[in-house]
Amino acid sequence: MNELRNTQIEFKRIGASLGAEVSGIDLAEPLDEATFDALVQAHGEHEVLIFRDQDITTEQQKAFGRRFGKLTVHPFAPSDGDAPELIVFDNNADNPPWGTDIWHSDETFRAEPPMGTMLRALIVPDVGGDTMFTSMSAAFEGLSDRLQNFISGLEAVHDFKPFRQLFSGDTEGRRSLRDFEERYPPAVHPVVRLHPVTGKKVLFVNPQFTVAIQGMEESESRGLLDQLFRQAMVPEYQIRHQWRPNTLVFWDNRAVQHYAIHDYYPQRRRMERVTIKGDRPVGVEVEENSASVKSQKSNRTAGDKAQHGAHKPINVGETEGA
Ligand code: OGA
Ligand code: MN
Image (cartoon, rainbow, N blue to C red):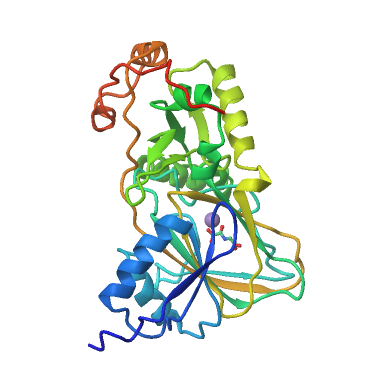
């Protein structure tokens, strides 16, 4: 009950678009309310929070995670039966890293993708093994007004496609894949989501899981997605994070994509991760224009639209000066 315990907290911005190093906090200790509130705000504002020199246990990492919400279990990551919320990446010569060297937000194939992920380094390679982050609010901001307007109100389909290769082609594997398809049907999310803490608009598509834009021809959808994926790769929106043992990074999975650089094989890299439950993404209100008229003709699944507003008229003439 020591209210003053964590009040030395400070945030030092490290990138123009995102990222802050957090000091004056010991993650081994429970958080007081003021510090917790400061972290919630800072997580939204900076999108990636970096805590150095946190020599904490797995249990303390979980306790820190649970402050922000329920810990979730990744449907496809191998995990310990006793501690399914913990993901351990222990990569080395016999276990090359897999599946994270692509730009992505975590688990967007779920109807409620995680709000955040906490990853802690235990063993890091001498050279390599950095993680890149890109701000999808900055990426959205960097689009022209024309394209911002066009994509606002669109919805995209997210699928667990990279994990399909984990299933064998035999009867058992195919049955198991069908089970997962039942449990995790493709999720439909707004292409531009409203961040629940900051109110910022965030471009919410990623090349790992987003497979199509609803209501467009396949080639149109492919072309637009490629364009939007490229937008996340602009260096101005990124930071490159270097790990040390006992660094914990808490990223806002609603607002960033990340990419694990697989350049350290066969060196060893051991990380522990917990993932925090998020809400169903909410899209931006759009007003009626030709794009939304067209989207109403598309074969949207019944019931999946109501909460995103009813497509009211848009001010296409309203553009800001360059
Ligand atoms: C993850 C992930 C990045 C890394 O934990 O979701 O993508 O650098 N990891 O290991
Ligand atoms: Mn990831």
